[in-house]
Image 1 (tube, rainbow, N blue to C red):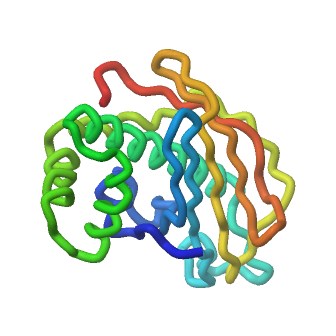
Image 2 (image 1 turned 90 degrees about the vertical axis):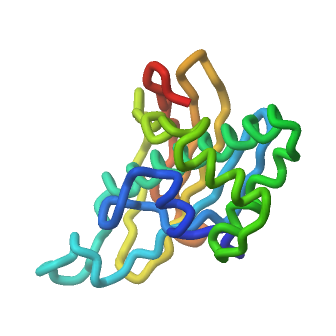
Length: 190
């Protein structure tokens, strides 16, 4: 899959940093009433969690679930940026293009506007948005060092301050985790 954007943009959207940043690239996004996002994270042999461990090197399931949660947060943030653009009379579909331009260090009017939202405007409190309210997932596989972990998240319902996501983590066609995550916004978050 082609990468829409990577760490440069993800680190502007999420408060997490390595080694606790579990998403390294967003490869697809679809907005609308049931927005969806696919993201990836290569699992490297030199990850700090593997220090001193003997093969086989299995990525902790809790990290897979955290990556799914971070992917849900990214999905909500991009969707929120689309709503902000639409309210300002801009094309909401230009958000992903602006994020891609930010990743490539290409500056234009849309990326400058997007930067203003991310730095201190309408998205100032967005990092408070990612509180997990419920995690109902089934771990059915393992991820080994050297594999590419793919996160697939789709927002299926919104109940006031709560958003429900169907989630799946895969390596190739092999499902590792599947289920649902409910995220909550904190009072006053964007």
